[in-house]
Image (cartoon, rainbow, N blue to C red; front, side, top):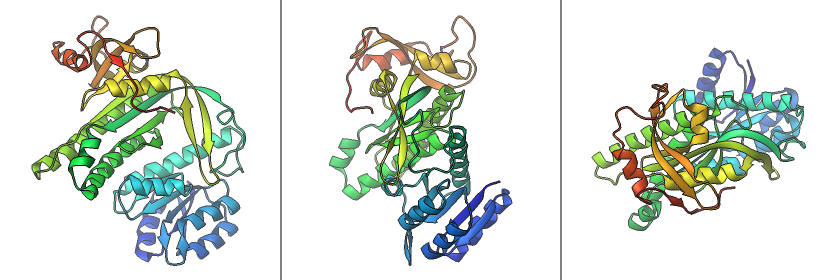
Length: 370
């Protein structure tokens, strides 16, 4: 059970959300605007604050500031009335822990609340109780702590062509829809989206909340992304629009995990060769494909099916890496061909690699990975 403050000037929205949260066992208080929220935050302690972005007597920013000053342990989730990643960036820029689009199924909001509570538990374990969620005190993460985790990069193929060949508003809407699906898949798998980069995202699995199955979670998120974007693309083409595809890269390894903060927000980023390798795997992937390294496969082989792509050359690394295409979930078939999809004759995998070279692929970065 968590103590949750709902801040919204629409009575029906407060009533509906309040009923749903109380049904889940949470203690709920309601405020009809910034002034009422500020008073409530001064009188009681809350675990989560769910606030509208724009209200008649002020902005969600003011609720965030009041929460930071009066209830520093609280994580704030901003409700937006406008879809797309531009609203997500605005909410994050205001210092929110997360955001949720109004009108969507409430299960998505429940997952965000669960994530906020998990993050709080993490801060308490690290001895950070009582410090603002937006700006943590010096922690192993802030100081450059080491963490073994899984990094995922995903982007939309042909985004430049989309922007060049279509009306700007139409192109923006398509990008919004794709980014929304990528972020939702990460959240559903328990990951953290720590960067939104125009036509793609970077996500971490295993930080800030540690999950022993971080590699499996990343693979599950990648498959969910591909499925969601494929459904969206199919709906577009049936209406006469242009189809869209994404590519995903995944790698696991030990990185330096540190906090990056501003005056109202902090986040995690992962620094080290594993991050760069994950970005290179994304660049190797063909449209509608997900490529992962042997390091990730070693952690997730009991739960995924892959096709081998052979050894690939990663610029900046001395040794070649074994790369695999993720094709589905399911236990390995057997020791001899544990990593191979039994229905694949090798030709599909060869076609994936052939885009770069018949036998090896040299992957050159197209954008920096933090």
